[in-house]
Length: 205
Image (cartoon, rainbow, N blue to C red; front, side, top):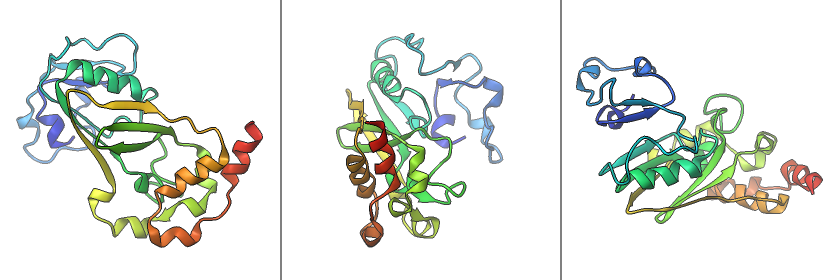
């Protein structure tokens, strides 16, 4: 559990309070928790029922390495903007999600549903197709990504008052190939070739 979560007064989580620190606490970290069992709210954050908080209840909200996992990140972003006046969002970068070897012989994290594009105005989500695993020309090896600074492996958004959010729906193989190529470092340009993902998407039409 990161410093940001332990510094929070309230936590919204699918898992119960007893699971906090599931991924490990350093010595003494549990004693610095600001939330309690009463302010740990168990909730499916994608539910279309409003979160149990009032409008602008919080001065600041942190959503770190969550949006890429959930089934409806746009809904989560909408509720974040309703209950908080400002906040911070962090997701894996496109480079990280197109890196083979992050947690197995496939691109990025196996359980992530979305590729996330962040700019100064907001965040956009693209379905992370399993076909990416058959597109080596649109991936990089872990040895490359490990050599890059952490800032290139994370995408962050500091927002105040609101931000834009939405899903980008890609319907053609050519558009998807171009989109995936955008995330590759310049030195990988020579690896870009026609791909099986384009062929797979063509068969859907």
